[in-house]
Image (cartoon, rainbow, N blue to C red; front, side):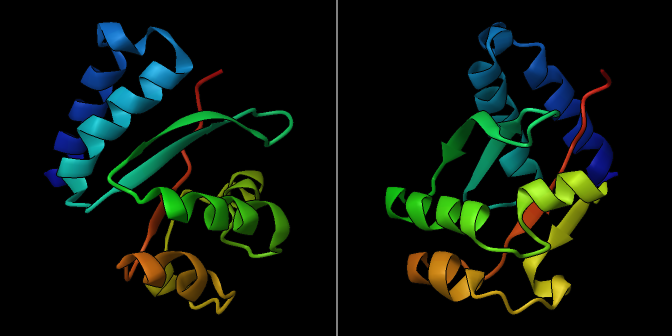
Amino acid sequence: MRMSAALRAVTAAAAEPAAVTPAGTAQSVLHALLPQIGADGGALVLMDPQTWLFTTGAVDRLPAASCHPFFRFEVDMPSPRAFRRLAATGAGAVALSRHGVDDGYAPAVLHPHGFADELRVVCRDAG
């Protein structure tokens, strides 16, 4: 039931007038999704499907000081949890607390800012 509500909220957000640009879509979808999953904050990144590079995104209630460590991890670390690797392998979602990989991410990026866990989801477009 909760998943259906989250999907409806995301679908409605993607159709909002603010969602006419990729950055606007990211912000609208993130704003609709966070209350549905009960998150304290979040980030939504859009990636080029050919290069796996980040193109734009949105951030809500995450401290600015967490951004550089997050992107350093994404670019420099060979973790199987990196978004590029999740997207390349076809993975759908992974929670840090359930993944069991000690890649140094949590103590470097999450814990200094008061976060204990992280959910990563990779969604693909229909094109």
